[in-house]
Amino acid sequence: MFSVAQIAKFVDGRIEGAAELAINQLAPLDSAEFGAITFCAQAKFVSQISTSQASAILVTAENSHLVKNTAIIVDNPYLAFAKVSQWFDWRSPIQAKISSRAVVAKSATIANTAQICAGVVIGESVIVEDGCYIGANTVIGDQCVLGAGTRLEANVSVYQDVHLGQNCIVHSGAVLGADGFGFAKQAKGWQKIYQLGGVRIGRDVEIGAGTTVDRGALSHTFIGDGVKLDNQVQIAHNVHLGNFTAIAGCTAIAGSTHIGENCTIAGLSGVTGHLNIVAGTHITAMSLVSHSIKEAGVYSSGTGIEKHQSWKRNVVRFRSLDKWVKRIKSLENEMQKLSSKKQ
Image 1 (spheres, rainbow, N blue to C red):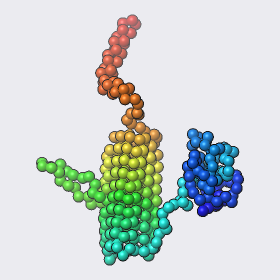
Image 2 (cartoon, rainbow, N blue to C red):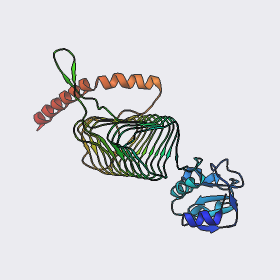
Image 3 (cartoon, rainbow, N blue to C red):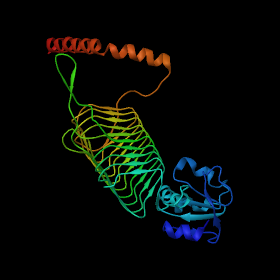
Image 4 (cartoon, rainbow, N blue to C red):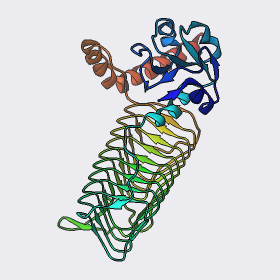
């Protein structure tokens, strides 16, 4: 339980109201009750401020007069909410111990402050630094490194030669360092290209449930500092993700593509291989990126949803575009001839 004063100090906010009020939970703006703190970060929710029962609301100065109880005035309510959320984290603190049901290679180095849960398997020459947490049944291959404060949830698979920086979070079902998709066509079938690189992941990276990051073919696959990967994202071999890039669920990045810093890629998007995407690029949902992007901005592809009958008609028209272009060009030529005759 925290006081309004403690929270305001933590987020560098200014209080209008009762600083001594106790806060015991975070809650949505429209359903928060007394004892909760909430926030308003978008104009479309401003109308809910005056009816909210929350003990305290994180708001901008222009909306503070609408708060019934206590306002904590900040420049960015959403960012303030994000910071406060860590105070209400449900996960238990790290307990420095190695379960008797874990299997740890003799050559592995495990910090005294790390927690290794039941069913964990840790390979040869692995380094696990201070304050790491490794959840039940997670497997870590030989020669891996886990930076201080990194957390692997249950049932994570980490292949050989994967390095994670400090304070990373990897959720259940993620696979780091599996073979990239490399095969050479031969007369009958395919010759496997053995994937000899590793994976290098920076600090403060979060990797969602069921996400896969393939190892490099010869050099490493690289994930920069502060990168955020949603659930079920596919990162192919030798991809390079710049610092602070975020990629939403069910997106696939093909091999050897370089994506710059501070990019966002929305869900269900696809990026083909061997491309370069400049820093500061934002790609909307269900987009296909088939060529390099050299100028930062917002990019989209595909078509938005519409009623089925309208969509069917437009599909027919789309298939006729080439015919219509030819007809228009023909009409333009005829008009040009007529214009020339008049002159």
